[in-house]
Length: 386
Image (cartoon, rainbow, N blue to C red; front, side, top):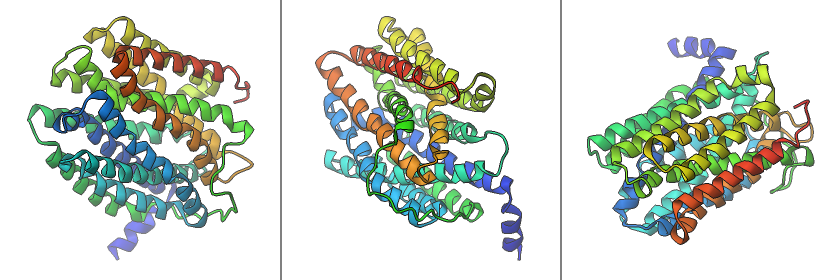
């Protein structure tokens, strides 16, 4: 009886919003927990930048390989079931990286980890679009703000784990168990929605109206994931900073992303999507340029903050636009635009390792600044009504 009463109370716009928000938290907290231990896991396996860059390819490859599969299941079943599948897989695999004793084991783990994150990410965004339809005002960037807040919390906990010399294996295992419990608790509150049953190709590119947004998404995802994978190593290898300062710098980055997304809905209403995307591109380019030109602890942290603000609202706004496509269902639009966006996630961060090996990580960050310039160019091609 109590369970039925609670379920009825949760089947309201506020209840659906809360449940979807929790799944964004699960995703952000889990991924940031992994990211906060990347330097330790790299050191544990005695890998160089180039070798670790090769290993990192596994995560986005797994993500890309499951993209067509995710598109299909979002069209044949409710996004809440897809979200449950993705969350369970994501949290189970999260426990494993710290236990990898060989490189091949970490590669296999990251392949599955990437695939599970893709299923969780696209399905929870599809859920967010369903909840958004119940509200007259924009709430999309707030969901992503919670993801960032969770990422901040995960990075902060990671800082504590590092300072207390807790092994990555025990740290990530604890997070995995806790997030599985949260998943089981909030899944019954998620919104039930009918699948589109859209007959679509197994793989499709964004239509012409969405292509420029997909390229913007490409740049933003490339820059954001570069920060997740390489910001800590940049601090260690270029600035020769301590482990504590390295983790603290990542916390500064996540703080900037979080605050940017919490302000995103208000900023869009005041300045418009095009202006927000333009400012975001400028901040990304300036942030990476600052890291290259002034490689000192304080200036680099400031550069990280600029990059965090720059990437904060780009993907939520692009996903929101994709969900309004008249030619595709929400699931198909999200997966088609993500196909381009995740190529940035796939190709660019591992390439940072190769560029760092040949030149230096400073030059790799300068190339990221040029990517910000590409984003500026694409934003200028957006019509004013967007």
